[in-house]
Amino acid sequence: MNNKLIQASHNSTSLIGRLVVYATFYCLITQESPFRALFISLFGIVLIYTLIRSLEYTNIGTTLGYLSALVLLPLALPQTIKDQILPFGYQYISISFIASLFHIGLNKQKLKGLSLGKLSIYTITAAFAPTSYFAGPSATFEEVNNSKISGFKFGSITKKTAFLASSGFFRITIGYLLASSDTILVNNIFSNIGFISLLGILLGLVYGIFNFWKYYLLFSGASELCQALLLLLGINVIDNFKNPERSVFYHEIWSGWHLNITQRVRDYLFTPITLFALRRFSNLNSFLRYILIEGMPAACLFLILAIWHGGSPHDFIFALVSTILTVSSRSISKNRRLLNLISQHFLIKELICLLSLSIFGLALGVYDLDFTNIKLHSQTLQNFWSLIPYLTVVILISIYYRYQRYIHQLRDSNNDIGYLKEHHFFFIEILCALYIQIFLLPSSDNLNGFLYFAN
Image (cartoon, rainbow, N blue to C red; front, top):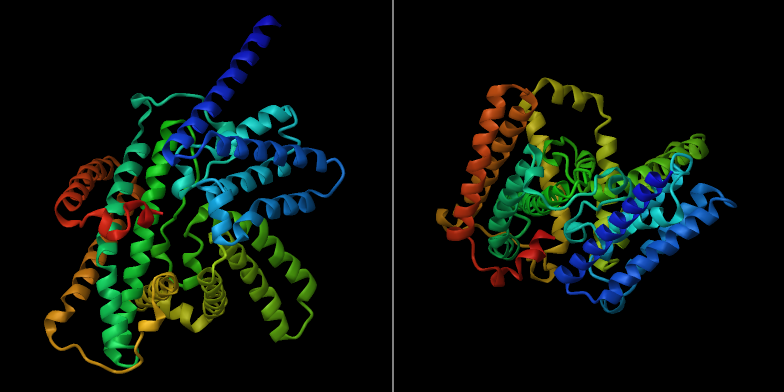
């Protein structure tokens, strides 16, 4: 009996010690005051206490809905107010809190043995998981609860950790290189060429592909670095991206994009609303049925994303555009003739894939473009040399795309040859990234800082 008490006391001390270390690291790296960290901790305790108490009297779904709204509500405030009252990284911390609340609420019977104190400590520790508040993926109660308490040990570096770190560094470097030519491409395409000419349309599509890869590489690279660090600490979080570049249709890209929030919104909101709409609106006429069953869940999903991203006009424009494109893409993907063409002709499949990636990148361009400088007139390029930047971008992206496909084939092979080749590419990625960082990239001051683009 005494041994059990001693063991329980030791575990509790270790849990609190890890929370203190994570919170201290958060304050040091973000330069936030300890009072902000204390606010996050108290907020987490209030959420868990409210959840546990409410589950005794109200429906689980209702309770989780109200608490999620409470967590997201501050993100809808004006930016000036948010800058004053919200702690650094609250966007990602909010995801951690909401995912933890859902896990606890939906698994209350399995977690019956855990006290309110332990539930709170695990939840707050997940919110403070190192670097997850920069780019995600956010750690949650489930992952911290399943993790082993350990320090930073080089002996704990696994194959997955090393490959995530090298891949993340390599991706960020290539994305950073693309971002360095961002202004040149935008000015040339949208200020000098215009939209009306065929050349302008083609280069616009090139810009869309460029923009997709810029955001994808920077964001997925930052996520992989974060994931690698958390693995060293014994926390195994979800993959934030799952090969969205392999998607054929536009809406399929979202199935592998920024899963830290999109997957959770789909699981907790999109799917329940879709099932509700199917039950309630299946007997309506075809137009209303289409709007309510296809459109309403997608609109709710992107509205949540817009609020989470900050609730600026750009966010809501992107949400509207994404809703229209997603619903349209879902409808197009159900065309049997098109599906037969895709299954029979590899080239058609690749062209549709490129078009989808380009449209996705152009939608992301809502955040970048200065629409006041767009000229709707036809104008041709004056000489061949003006095409060099675009050709370079296309070649660079094409090489990287083929390289990624080859790496995925090696990982899927599960044999000794594939394993050895993947190890060789591990060192090649590091050397290439170092070369680009040292010789090809401009200073971060010219790009408004590395973290801006990585996040």
